[in-house]
Length: 88
Image (cartoon, rainbow, N blue to C red; front, side):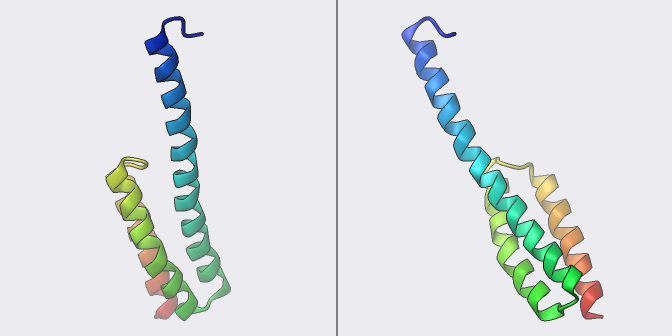
């Protein structure tokens, strides 16, 4: 356990940031799952709409450092490929 006042404050800040970042990571995962669920149903329009909503969320979390920018690009690329394959 932290002993100095500075260490106690850092522990408080770290816990607050951890819980906030966890909720943001969850938001990314939820949006990705929404796209995958729409692709699974086979509805191209719904999948495109879900993908359009997911992209800004993924980009925003990459900008904030919640997920790595390459991971964001990878998710977007794979989701886009699935949505396009569904439309074709």
